[in-house]
Amino acid sequence: MQTIGERLEEARKRKGVSIREAAEATKIRGDYLQKFESNQFDLGLAELYVRGFLNSYAQFLKLPAEKIVNDFNGLGLGANGRPRTPSREVYGRMDLSVASTEEAAVSEPASAGPETQPAPSRRNPPSFTRGGGTLSSGPAIDPNLVFKGGLVLVGLVVLALVIWGVKSMMHGAVTPSPAAASVVQTVPEQTIILIALDDVRVKVAQEDGKELYQGNLVRGETHTLPKKGPIFITASEGKNLKVEIAGVRYPMPFEGYDRARIN
Image (cartoon, rainbow, N blue to C red; front, side, top):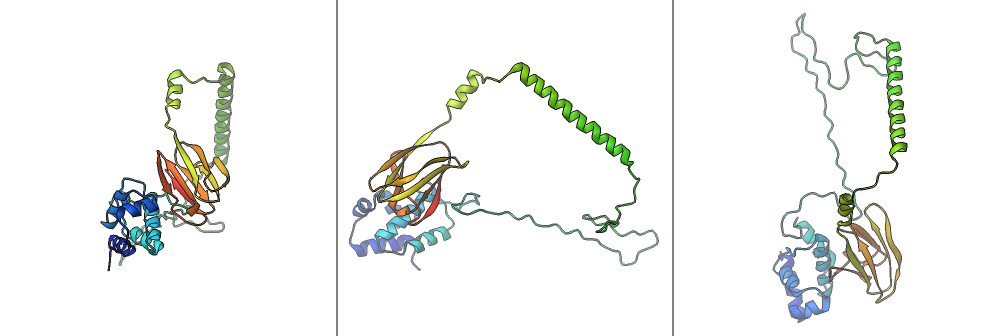
């Protein structure tokens, strides 16, 4: 069975184009295409862009792009060419971790003597029953003591709230120190540019749900946005949109309507 690189190289040669011509046509760097054909995927980029470049190159060579990308995913490699580690980040998916239920086993001796007692279950005491049963027969707690203890606890909470309110009124609003303000100002901020290859509707939001942009872009139109931390880009037609970061343009990793996360 041919590798991904062998299929790409064979299709390019069959098409009669050089690496340089393919790079100019796809707007993908020639050294990236050379690495793809050598089965090297350590581009130093996010895995999102590696899949996007593979998808675009396969489409240019008239290969089944979806199968090429699926075969790359099946390699279990990240963008650095090393095995991926499990991640909770997914585009449009959510990983659920299911905690295994521990079963409490109760062992009973084969021959129980008069002083042998069966081991109690860790989950439920032997005297526990559903629908009005009793718990273990220990010393009873006086309900009056429980009620009084609750009153004392409520009183302490109310007193703490009153003291906190008085202090807030006396001291007023807290002004951050110059050192703290300088720390806030040094949070790195990037700029991204949305580039419409054709008419497309785009929505950009931060990881906390704050919307940065939503609107329609016509062919050739660009829109610049500030980027601080991960963002989500939703496009009506992924093939009609590119994103420029630090002077490098990246295609969206999908063709139709979908959403992608950019770190």
